[in-house]
Length: 339
Image (tube, rainbow, N blue to C red):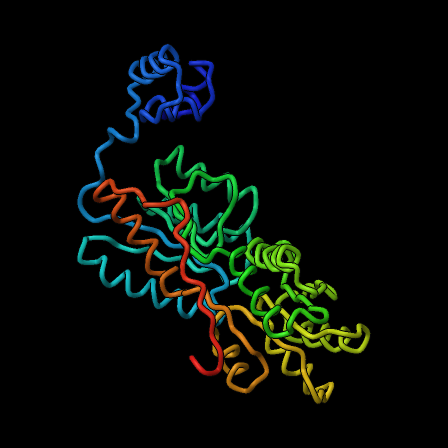
């Protein structure tokens, strides 16, 4: 029977966190408790992570992405492709699994499949669910497989680090830009995809926070969910501009942003609101070029795909942990003049 941290914790009468700190010399543990934990671990022939030999020969690192058909994934996949090519020289194989919809069951199945194939590390764009959170912790604690999250994070896991945009900070950035364009006058229509989407929610939270704290005169006209559908974005804008007076800005933080141009065309506006969109995709770039949007906030998808395999490789091969729990990528601001 496999000896786990939980078994040692039960026998020692302490928490799993206490066991982990005692066995790996991370401090904040009473000396008597630490001695008891280490004695029980020795009796059970349990070897702490820091004393285990790093795997020799070819390594297997798993990568799980979602929204495989999304235009934004193009840049992430370019980064992954480059890392795959370079890391092959290190005798590292990258095993990829793509899940097109944001589906908890499919992601859980992908994690199980990669674990069966013998991966020694995992980089994942996690679905935000308790089941996925528990599965990630199972990999880390029971299988001793380090995990990195990228693009989207998940609360409650013991992952090594997160690689991606600081979504909250990007929301603050969008608020500053909107306030500058509108001179703090009017109302802003905020369009998200799904209210359950952690990344988009953080963007919206940051936007609202900055408007409040900066003393801007802008107010929120409405916050609407579009289900990431262009037709819904179009309908939301048409209805809002017809029913709510004084809208001077539109913030779209999720997919379906091509519906913005359709709405303007349907309404035949002589003067459109200022528009900020998120993510560098061909559709959003065209909106900038055509004068439908004013600013595009990008999040460096290439680095989000490229960096996680390297962090895992350094950890597994050289025992080098990431320098920070949060490896934030650049917040890139684009206009039609600097595409």
